Amino acid sequence: MVRVQPPADSGDAPVTGYQVQRSPANSDNWVTVTVTPVTDLEFVAKPLSPGSRYQFRVAAENEFGLGKFGPPSLYVTTDESVCIGLFFLFIIQEPLYKHGEQ
Image (cartoon, rainbow, N blue to C red; front, top):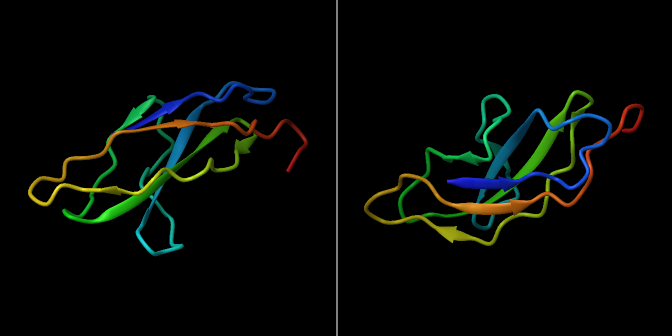
């Protein structure tokens, strides 16, 4: 499970959701694991392969668009026998874009 702490500064509009991405070990390939931005502060990231290592990162979104992705998590290895999701806490430190910024 991925757990997000809302950003301290959400720009000129409230956060409307979060995008979650994962990357396997030794890869620069980030894959979005959320079909649409999630609105809950907890999200089960799946599917994940048993016995694999992943990093995760999160970006907040508001009516003006998607903010910058935060730094990636530490690598986490999934369980060999059961892979039901992972738990992370992300603190989004960068403010979101404000109206007129890019």
